[in-house]
Every structure is written in C-alpha cells, then in structure tokens.
Image 1 (cartoon, rainbow, N blue to C red):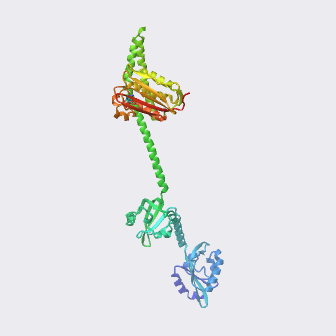
Image 2 (cartoon, rainbow, N blue to C red):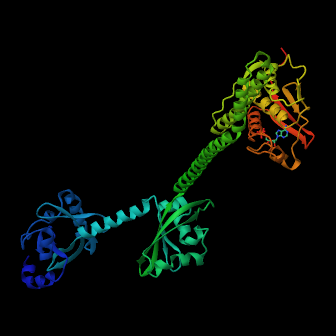
Length: 504
Ligand code: ADP
C-alpha cells in the first residue's frame, strides 16, 4: 500500500492516461489501486474499491473458479490476457454483469507481489460479434442461394449452404469456378457485359433471368439479383439467386390453361357466329324457298274451292295432292334446318329402336310419289318385307326422304328412280339411282358441303343442306354415304348403315 501511496502521483498520472480500467491487487487479492476508468467501468466512486477483495468485481458464480485461476497465475507469474477464448464477466456495484477482457501483469515491488489487471468492457464488441454471427448464420441458412464473387477475376469467394446444396458443388470446388461455369447461357464476354452497368455504377442492382447448371448437368431456371459491394478494397458482387422452377412451371401451366380456355372461347364464339349465320341464312332461304310452294298451295287451294260439282272430284284431288306435296316439301326443309341447328348446338339426341324397314320405306315413297312428274316412277325395293333394323327411325326417314326426293327432283318426266336394298351380315346397303341431270364432275367434290348447289341444279328449288346433314347424321351413327354420277345420265347414291337385328 505504501508503495502506491509513495508513488501515488506517478501511478495516478500514468494510469489516468490509459483508457483501459486498471485494477491492482496484492497477493491476498485485495485491491490496492484503481484508475478512474476502472471505477467508471465497475460503477464505483474514487477510492471506494481500495482495500476490497477482488471478488467484489467478479460475479458470484465465478468466484470459485476465479480463485484457483488467480492462485495458479500468481504462482506462474507470467503475463497473459484473460477473457480470450472464454467468456469472462465483471460485476458492477449495482450487481449487473458485463463481458470483459482482462490482461494480467504480475510485478513485484519491494518484495511484494502484485498483479495489475487491465480491464476492458467488451459489451459493445460482444454485441457486434453476435450481430456478425447472426448475419453469418442468415447468410448460410438462407434457403435462397447466395454467391459472392470477385468482380475482377469472377472467381467465387463465398457461397452459402443453400446454393451449394442446389448447385451440387462444394465450397472448395466453387472457389476455383466463376458464374460462367454454372450459367450455360453465358460465355465470359457476355457475362462481363451483363455486369458492366453495376461495376461502372450505372445501376445499383441488376435483375435478370437465366439458367443454372448443376454439377450433375441438370438445369433449373433462376432469377438473379446482383449487387456490388466492396470487400478489402476489392469490388465484389453478391448474387442472390431464386430458383424459379415452380414459378416457371406454374406460369407454363397457366399459359397452357389460358390457351385452352381461349380456344374453347373461340370455338364457342365461332359456333355462336355460325348459329347466327344459320339463322340469317334460314330467314333468307325461308323467304325465298317458301314463296314459290306457298303461292302454289294458295293457287291450288283457290282452284280446289272452285270445283264444287260432284263430277269435278278428280280435279279437286289433283289440287289437294299438290297442296299436300308442297306442304310436305316445306316440312322437309324445316326438318333439315332443325337438324342443322341441333347438330351445331350439340343437342342432337339419337333414339335407337327396332322397326321393320318396310314401314319407313313405304312412308317415304308414299310422300315422294306426290312429287312425281309425268311418267316418272319409283321402283319399290324388293325383298325387304322381313328386314328389321335397329336404328334411329326418324334419321333413316330423313336420309331416304332427302335422297329419293332429290332423285325425283333432279330427273325429268318418264324416268325411273330405282331403290335397291341389300342386307349384309352387319350392315344394310341402300342404293338410290336416277336417270336425271347428274352432277358435273368438277363439282362433285363439293356436293356434301353445306349450302352447295351444283350449277345445273339451280333451276330447281333447293337449299343445299340436305346432303350435308344426311352425311353428318350417318357418320355420327356409324354409317356412310357415297355416290357416283355422270352428267345428263344420272346419279346413284349409296347409303350404308350398321344393323344389329336381322330377319326375325
Ligand atoms: P338441294 O337439293 O336442296 O339443293 P342437297 O343437299 O340435297 O340440296 O343437294 C345438294 C346439291 O347436290 C344439289 O343442289 C344438286 O346440285 C346436287 N344433287 C343432289 N342430288 C342430286 C341428284 N340426284 N342428281 C343431281 N344432282 C343432285
């Protein structure tokens, strides 16, 4: 104690010049001197610590281990710093603890041994260290891939775990590689070109999309975020990589979906448009096609009304016949149109049933007979009385009506319409031939197109829809229609339908 009193001025001057806290203890670990930095760090007034045991500056839980340390230290009498490599804490007057780094310097004066402890409060440094550790953890644990590389050599300097895992290379392997090695779409020149705006300060951040190639050669789409930082005077680039495989897949799926929906919408619009056109067409055809038969019906009805006498029955019947046939003709047009409408809107329903073929053939020929010209005949098919078919009866009637009416319509007086029906194992073949105007060769390929009418048919009434719907219905039901025709000689239409029931 004396020593310090004697030299107290010198000690004071020297110790106050030091920013670290200085605490000097004797062999018994009693404090013999402190500087004001130490007083301040531990929260004591000047001289308040003098004579106190060193324990007062050490948290209680460390007392035991500290004693043995100090004893050992005194024995060895060597300089060393404490607090490196392990956590050392000091205790303030108010009882609070704080991390310290302490350097111990033993010395002896006048045969007395002392230890001078230089104490630094490292609270701030510890905090900074923890913060740094925290950031390092964030860097490493981030699920995004982070690559840091030298702007000059392009060599990777650091790569986080997430990146190593996805790309498949170890950090060691990556350190001898550059971004160009994992970006198949870039060569070095192109990559340097890409990052130039960052390096010359033209941009603060770069975002671009490219592909990364893993060690196993597989690839994945990425979004790259690049920023420049300076580390140890070197321009460094930090790349945060987002693996956008799922986003790209989702986008692709979405785009496909949009394409499908657009197509469906276009189809629906097209259908809508076609139906609209159909209605317009129907109105114009009705006004055109209905006029002649209607005025014929009117004339016949008027004339029939004039033949009031009993012996004029034959004339009356002739006009009534005309009326019936023309009404049937109009009815057929309407049926054809309804067929198109149902086929187009997808609301066509087929009804299968078993029925005798002769029933339908009789009805159709009966109606067609009313339209015959002078000397025209329809040769009734032979050998059909026992045939039973399983088919849509209305459709078969529509098919035969169209074909037989055409045969009658497009041939002149004194000709014959021949109907031949052949029953095969699982199909029925119906041929309808006429000796009429035929279909010009160059127009034959269009004959099943909707609204198509050959040049030589234009003098006759017609809509150009009969053959089109006949073909569509037959194909829907597993049947078919073909024809052969020679202009001015005649035509033969052949229909085949599948049958399930045979002779009964
Ligand atoms: P439409 O008879 O009402 O005009 P269709 O669809 O039944 O309509 O026939 C289309 C076209 O095919 C006819 O306009 C005609 O040119 C031609 N055609 C059909 N059947 C015959 C036939 N038996 N003889 C000559 N031409 C025919």
